[in-house]
Length: 386
Image (cartoon, rainbow, N blue to C red; front, top):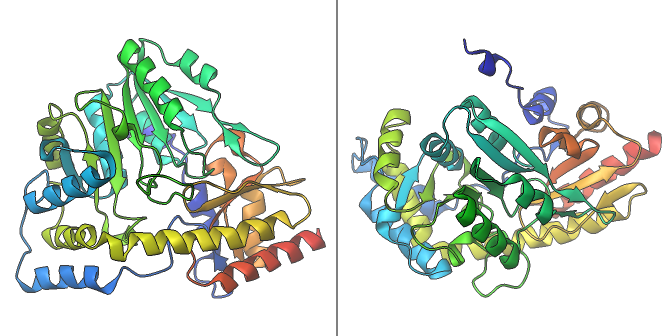
């Protein structure tokens, strides 16, 4: 086995979850998904497809009907996105890995802004790239901010790829339009590709003209060295379906099709049929998801702020409250103790970066606000016993 694979760290989130799975008394907020099922009409589209016998291979790049639906959907948000720039993938994580396989050679320098979902730092390492992490800066308010000068200094002509996730998992940090323009201009000068993980763009709670967070697609040219990753998981309550897509320069699309062939061959047709219906009826799903998540956020964060020794900011996007507990400097140990001693399942901050040691991530995508309130009560009681 390759030594680099042997050296990969196992998921610290899974490590905590494994300590509590199967326990009915644990309130689990560790994974990044809603506890609501996919809407019935989306599920029915897949059932109908199976009943029609659509159980065969499809095009590597996805059903033409789905790519057209994605083009229409993205075009309404960000202006025209040509069909030829799109590829359907087996989830957002598959989209990210395929993009990196297309762009990164062993030994290439990849810059990643952290804290971030650990797959985004593991994937370039798996490919043999040289990883450079540029950390966001934690503020006294609990918010995280980008040090633009530090990031620009690390992106040089030797940097093959810049990886950004905004709105960010776990911090909720979101790039501003001005920051995106600065980074795009800089990467044009250095010849650096940008891989933008924008799967949380619709889970955005600040005023915006198009109902989503700022996107590089709003300012980039079609042939810029930019690849944007999207997923049906978060905005459509479809985490288990494993359905995502890539937006890229059209010159890259045929090569991505080859990589899809060698990775997964294609996405199942019935899954894609569900995606088509989800996009066609997005007005019946996503706005309600966002409104509900905003209520959940506005319930959880004030409750956490009321606890002594808790440092937390109101996230502008995503589905997570990222908070620091004074006096608890080992995130993994704290998260495990919370499971065992309080029946509360949270993700440890150091799963996302070393600079997030001492922080915890709480996914607030719960259908029942009382469940969230009970979780805070358990945290408060546990802190009181310390």
